Length: 453
Image (cartoon, rainbow, N blue to C red; front, side, top):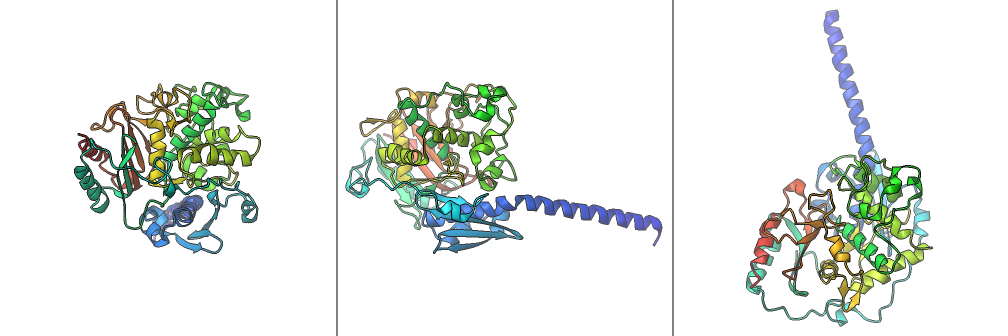
């Protein structure tokens, strides 16, 4: 073998070794994300949603590296441990708090945290009328129920709109006119929200604004921002996704959002430590970190965590008839207002009804006058696509739907559509990520609107 050939072989082997080493480093950096995603989501689906592990693995976890994880469910201690190659993550369930990944905290310390006792309402939802309860009124006239029933069957049974829909509900003039589930789900199943949780965070700010405790025009007032231009960021900038903070919302790799959700113990702190890239209020950029900063600001309104958690459960959830909803927290104790709400399809419909009724439900004002108008007013740099933690249809993203429709959208195709002029609400929950093509939502909305007489 000539010296030249030896040098070529040596160079190739060196490059190959460097590539293998770089690949190992990259995969190692992804380990907390891969195993954390599997452990957290499987644990929530089993212990919050009461789903079967094999169903979750076959549907929700069946993608990318996630599908190769080995998951162990411990029903005695209510936990899930997930392994991938040399990586491992553990998530635990706690009553009231939902599921939390173990990150920079011991399991013993985390389990010592106590959620305030649930409020005793003195009744079951099965015993009171809609909207606060589950005694449903007769369906409204003015809608073609035969056509709507056919749409519902094709959507749920036949996947006719190219989406894997677990649950579906339509309200017309505040009354449920369609409701359906895949066989393994029912009216008591809590479904993951993903980014619908951001709209819930908007609601919590609205409740505090009604009580005079938060003002959207005030600077956020975070101590770490006082010495630089981040001090100019207002609550409004955060709600409208125009904070100017650097952020990468790519779920396909290791990014700011995946690091925050699966590697960090204090998600809001991770988010508000990001540097400023744009002048606040001038540049729109979607950011789950922004929602968790707002969650931190909400928590800061209370002198202790017992009051904070009680506020969410008694001053909001119970007020709108969703007392069994679960808003999960990170290891630091702050609600994950970007992503992790678990609620029934009826709960999501009630939530939407609160906005359709301009912040009033069952005769009680929950939001201040004008809050819904503010929420649905376009952020200045969003090109008409976004309001305050709600998406807008001003730019006709869905051409078949009216321009004044506004909506909540989750990462895996969870959607709530509110059409005020038509007094119509549509809730679609399931697993229809855009990475797999997504649903033909525009056609679905067109068909539903076509049932209005």
